Structures are given as structure tokens and as C-alpha cells.
Image 1 (tube, rainbow, N blue to C red):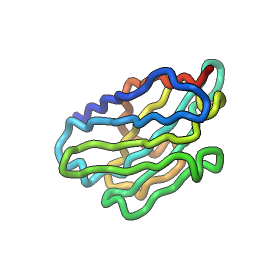
Image 2 (image 1 turned 180 degrees about the horizontal axis):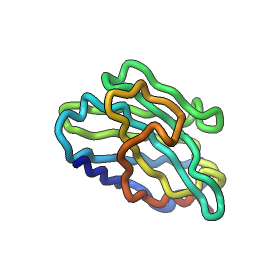
Image 3 (image 1 turned 30 degrees about the vertical axis):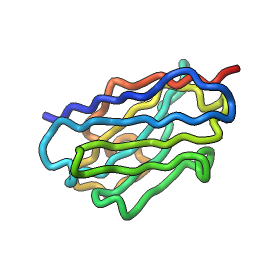
Length: 124
């Protein structure tokens, strides 16, 4: 069974930066495509970014492209999301997700395992 644990969330001012981490506890992390999604109260969970198993292919939502960077360290079984130039509308609970042998897509239903989420609040 795969467990995913996010960390790194918090309160940041507009224009600031945060780096989220997601630790993958199962074996064969490098067999999983990984992604970040986010959700605010009353709204559906939305795609943020995805990365394939090797880290050679990435995919971003238009709202974060150019500001966020997804990456992974397969030796450390860890996924990252570097968030720069943060805006109040980026405020949400951020979730990491894993899709075994998948390509890394924006489809929520493609992901087999989810973390519990970490809160990111962008406010002055």
C-alpha cells in the first residue's frame, strides 16, 4: 500500500514562495507518475501539475504555468512543487497523487493514491 504525506504548506504573502514536498512510502516510486491537485471549500479538486516517472515530462495548468515547478527525486522517493509569485487565488489545500505506470495527466480519476493535503494560504 502506498502512503503519500505532504508537507511545506503555510501562510505566505502575495508574491512570495513556498516549496511543497510529498513523501512516497511505498516501493518502486519510480514506477509512478505523480501530480499535484488543489481544492478550496465548495469547489471541485483541480489539477495543478503532473510529472512522469522519470521526471523528463511535465504538464501544468494554465493558471500556474511559469510560476510553479514540479520535480521529483526518485532516490529520495519525494515529489516537490516549487511555487513562486504566489497569488491569493492560489490559496487551497494541496494534494499529491500517484498513478502507477501512468503518463502523468490532468485527470483526477487516473490517480490511485492520494495524500491528506497541506494548506497553503496566500494573504497579506
